[in-house]
Length: 351
Image (cartoon, rainbow, N blue to C red; front, side, top):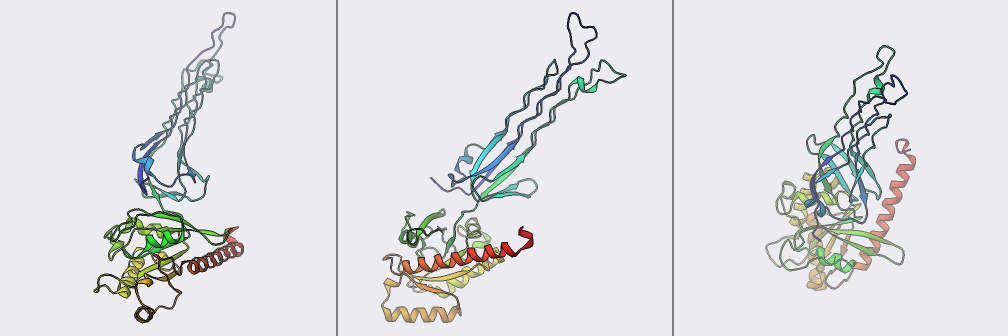
């Protein structure tokens, strides 16, 4: 199924039922008085995170969601039946904005997360409510209030522990294939990957992490060039970025160091928070160079970048070096998780 990461929908809560105008009529009861019941409330609309969904494709067809309205009241002080609430299932990792105001309504990241996005209308009052010592036969009722309606923008950001960053044809799709069971499209031309792919990388029997391969980025991505900003946001939820660089590009005019620097600038333009994430350098396609040439190319790359972070050498095509990379990633993610837990434990605001 094609990955769809944005959708606009219309949600409408149910209207409240109207109050009833009724008087008690019985053969042997004089002046029975008012007995009109209240209207039922309208159903509300809720968004619920469902871990079985991984795309917003269903919202390409179904764009309008309306909850049931409340029924009107009736005689004998019977309150109308309330409308059923409507639950709309969306993928985990979906941020919801109000289209008209731009407000972030919620960000549902965990299975079962639930958020009311449209409030059902209140039921109207029957004429019994207006009976008093000076008005024994009121003919006043109120109508139910309309249910809330909103235009919502759904934005799905993939939930992954590790994000692969790199220029088109850097070998990201091949790398995720080598390290997991994902089967992205692979070819020798740019923009083979047109939507994010997720792969589960298993390290040992009980350890695993999720890796996301997003479409290749080019200079100007933060302004929308290429596949651009549409996919940069998917890196925001990752704990670690792997910057994959082709150490043996086919085009002799391509300089790996300049490509790395260009994408680093795009991260900074898009989000300072994203640029501040831990980023490891993964030198790919090492099988295309001899050991001597690889050592020279690596030295030149690191010197030009002034790189002081972790560096890994892999060949995604032959899987060389991928096992060591996976183990290092697992250790790093465990450290990140432990740091977050400690921060929450000692942060008074988190309790």
